[in-house]
Image (cartoon, rainbow, N blue to C red; front, side, top):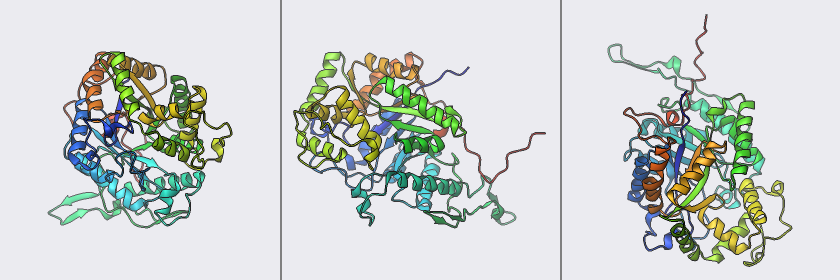
Length: 447
């Protein structure tokens, strides 16, 4: 029996996930637009034999430029550059189904998959927020259920496009003067509620068939979507009990959708703050918290909770009359997570901002390498995770500390690979997933 292995994804964000990371003496406030910075991070993660790295994105300017390094390089373009600087690690980019067209996006991911030798992944998002909507000529964001209905049709079209070339379409018969077989091209000719797409993709079928499909929404709509399409799920969970419940629910939904439960990998986020002793780790955490500008945190929290500016009292609790998740059209699951965290631990607004400053609702853990490895091992071994989204508070130092001090412990415990192996493998293979069959090719009949 093959031993179950831990999957690790490096979630890279500018100078680190902590909102005050850019203020530290070691940090470069301009690193978010520096290719060399991302090349260095990708190579560190590859040295740690991570399965993949991930770049978040959105079609709007996030937050206030006063708070932290703002703006981001377009991720598919950046990952194409990183593909030439790495050999093994998977390359996952966020792209919105709300503000893209299936043909163009399918072509971009197919191109990345070819250039990287089969290492592309797509984090599928539906994009909440009125700011993004107004950038695309809309007066307000579409309703939550509407965004997911559009996303489902978007995925169906993208799959048709990636399958519009059979694997053996290219003949390359120089003697006969025949480059390809036209009978193996299958235009989608799709007519739906949201999209009308006629022609075949202008990129051949890729090494993976199609990119690894990743999803990050944990609302009811998000979980239904993930059960139908996702092969990896990035999630935010604060306790191992909540993580176990989410894991069991998502696996059950996946089976009910007619899929193998092992073909969806659940990766909670963790923000590790590492020290040689627990006291040193706590001291690192306090330095970061001391650099938080609380007015920025209040503004961000009021937007998340859909409150009128000036509502929150820094040294008081959250208002008792917040609306239920069902009334929220934006980031539903993150809204609920933050409210439940504040209520469960009876946090003041100031304390809540401190807790959110490192990971925006993801688990933040300060401790020694052994303690970080223990936490990862506990969640992995108790039905709470198939792996983790590693979200260093400070970059590059936090990723270096994880690779140099936590990775060897995970390897010694038999949880993590010691190398990638000699042959180049696709991202899908790294996650233990099969290459999808082309929907236009009949499976062989067994007699």
